[in-house]
Length: 198
Image (tube, rainbow, N blue to C red):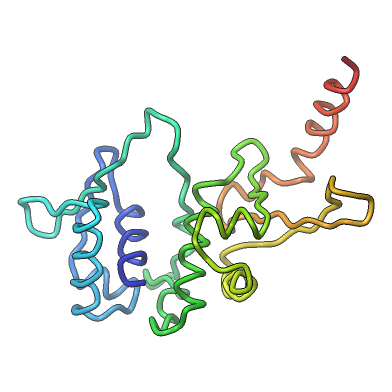
């Protein structure tokens, strides 16, 4: 969990070259993680080659950042921070709960799978489990934790499976909040109609 928290913070502070200047004190202030947990979290990220520690002290870089190719996601940032520069959700984590780990994994999954045209994530529990490794029965706990802490919003709509089926879509809070069904829905309806006319 500490590794995922550190990874998110590094991504938040990365410049266009993939470099972030983050001291242990700054990570501690934002997240509430102890220095020992920060150190272990960064070690995990280095071992998995997700980040590199640069020669300059407190400079970290994302190893696989390449915004010129597909496959990167927009990570909400500014709205997550309080006026004192902390992320309340991270401050509340106890780092001992499976639901907390699953919630962090699910959050990053949603970042990576968001439909940029509709600003929504459409994933079934089976797909969530396939992509993240989270057990199907544990997904509701992770979703609840993210929702209660204001990181996502769930939307229900009719599924195309049958007339009675309902499916869920998820929106990341603080990310292009002006783009939702009310502002993009008409265009979607017109696009579907146009496809059906041919």
